[in-house]
Length: 142
Image (tube, rainbow, N blue to C red; front, side, top):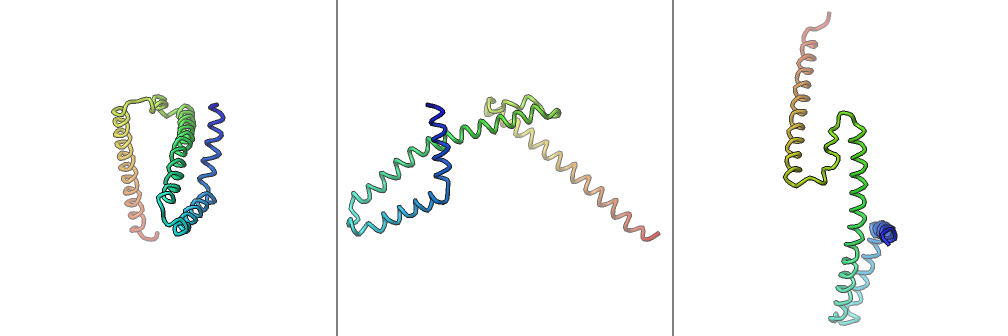
């Protein structure tokens, strides 16, 4: 059952995400709008589009959530493998999704700080390099 639902979710998600589906939806809405005068813009006419879109939206939430959950799990596994394979990486980062929000926020601050230090070091190196190039240019020929 789970495998069937997954296959169905992937097919429906791929199909619904296509340009053809988008234009088909526009065509359906246009046909509904054009049919308004024919049905005298009645409550039933309005109920048809409201009920149809509600049902489709309700079902699509579950299908799309299924594919997103699976994609997220796959990405986590790939990242975990990269972390394990990289000798300089911290293996403690493999299961970050299991941490509390507070622990994740602490890690975010740590990585922001690391990033700021890296940017500072790179900027310092670039300034030294420019100064070094400037001295060579000012010496002139010879």
